[in-house]
Amino acid sequence: MAPRMHRSAHAAMAFSFLGLARAGPFEPHRLPSNGPWFEGWYTRIIDSVANRSVAVIVGSFQSQGQHEFSSSWAALLATYPNGTMYTEQVFPKQSDVKIFDRGHPVAADPPKNRPSVFQVSSDVGTLSVNDSHSSLSFTFPSGFSVSATLSRRVPWDSSCPDECGPEGWTSHVPARLVPTHYFVHTLASNAVYSVNGENGVGFAHQEANYGGYFPTAWVWVQGVAGNGETTLLLTGGEFTVAGATVKQFIVGYRSQRFKWNFRGVDLDQVQATIDGCASTLKISAVSVCGQRRLEIEVFAPPTSFSQPLFFPTPAGWSNDPGCVESYVALARAVLYDQDNVELETIAMPQVALEFGGAYRCKTSAPGNESTLII
Image 1: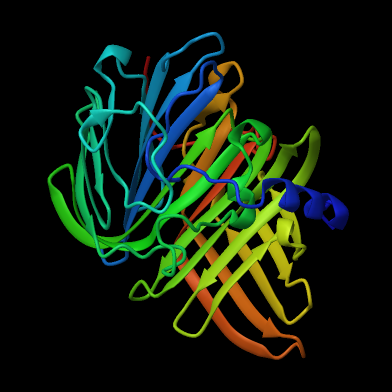
Image 2 (image 1 turned 135 degrees about the vertical axis):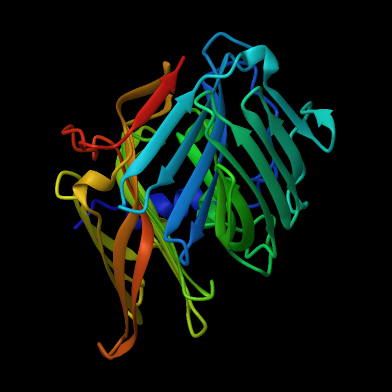
């Protein structure tokens, strides 16, 4: 069983941070007076008809002792028809990186519960977000280009779409007390896209991370099935909270019949078996009162992973050990009630599977192309 925080520790943290206001989680945040600090946005498009998936990631990092962002990073990941991954990473010229909220430089934290309206641009491309609509257009140094428009956002929680996300109550914990915060903007927006002149349609997932640095080890899974009404998201790993390193996991499953969340911080029991070298992940999640249980198995071919991606550490960007992603994983999820009666089963293809930090296998996957420009 994964280590879990003691109940009294959860209660103390919940009391301490209850009612704290926080900024809008998907919009750009005001930089702290001193680093380390990072902010990044991730967009992944899944086209089941063309058997294609493409993702664009943009992020900026503020080094310790600096008052502004000191470096930025962008990545492109795209699957080939045979399941292998193309990876391209670049560090844009920092003077060309612009982050604007509603057309202005970010001078203050955005208020919570406000629609996200912002733009992140560099000499590589631009990401624009306007509430339920988003667009991106990027051309990487190799000439690889991707553009997309997103609409009909599907938030994590439709009752509070601009504030409620996977973290639950821990989203109110000040960023300086946890290594990173995490928010999902959309689970399955409609996407119209073009990759190197080839057009397609599909579903898009968007999320953001911000804080001091990534955890020391983590996994991440994201998938969309059928007509976009069934989605799977899980993330977790080894996090340091208030000076103690614990394993915490978040699991979200959505379908026409069910909308289930599991969080270790809510005292749900989440057990994880992680094997980065075998490219497998098993999750068993049981609600705190035992009324709901979700079993998940995820597997990806070892040769389908990207080259190691950079991620923010206290010292800056690093791809050692980095993280690797596959977009052709297969996930199987089974839902049970308190009497162990099977409620729903789904097999989901084209799932994203990521192993990061200490969970990443150090054996490189052969055959995957990579371009890095610094």
